Image 1: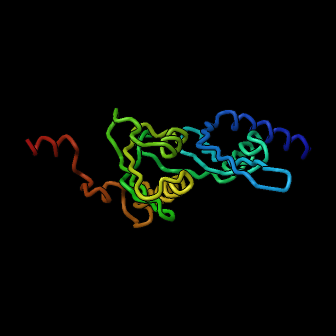
Image 2: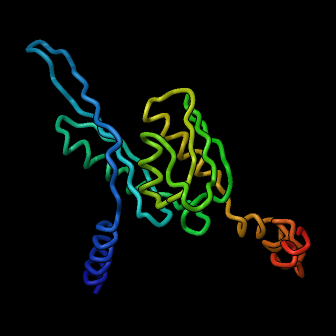
Image 3: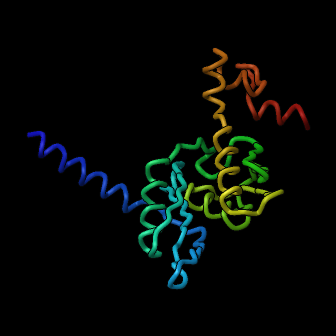
Length: 191
């Protein structure tokens, strides 16, 4: 009976894996000089996500490109994290992230803005399923540092519901609205 459960679980996992968005950020060729000449190796950097708030990154090294990509993909799948998104399209709030000499600033954006980010950060947002975000990378432009700084920033994002639960308050109290206040009434008073 346990055998059937494993097969069923494996079938479910393979369906999940087919839904994943895989982005190859970069391939680096390295050479080792030996007595007979040069031996080439390849390092791959991959970002993987489900387009619905889960994303991961990985790097792999091998003598052949496909093997390096496979290793990087496996590492990315193992390290996937869930990021809370507002309206399933943007971030909840602005956030900064650092890794080594790489620094990034991620800003929530209104609908229709699109992904305004370059290189490795764009790959992360596309795999994550973010549609509207403005991002800036300063310092190191090394893809490894940019990706790790972006993941550091994404790891700092907190959903209003989680903050409210931690403080023992309601979400409306976190945003500074009184429980009886309605958005239409506040808009009418402003006019």
